[in-house]
Image 1 (cartoon, rainbow, N blue to C red):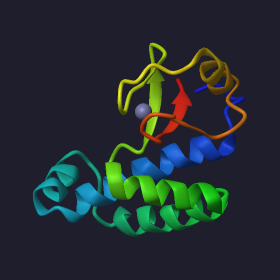
Image 2: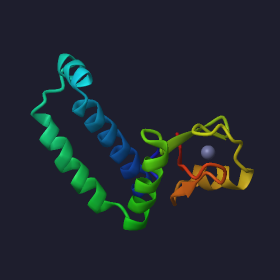
Image 3: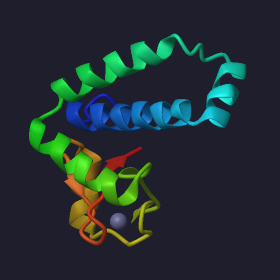
Length: 120
Ligand SMILES: [Zn+2]
């Protein structure tokens, strides 16, 4: 992602990564897998702390949107735009929306599925 991208979008992507890692870690089988990949389980507390810090740093309206989307789409509520389409629902995005996403100065949602979009 380029440096112009809105801080909240970057934080929301990080928040999703953290939530996915935490979910993996809470699953026994995956926890073992994570450990074998070098993720010490002691870092679970660090992840939880990072989650709190990230959530506090994002505009709370976006945190609420993220939480609502996470309840529906689980691990994929913040998705990249791929070839002009939302990679969550594969709906084609209008040109104006693509331009906005490219500029990256605000948090945009897919008109079709509502997922939070980011330009890669
Ligand atoms: Zn979509």
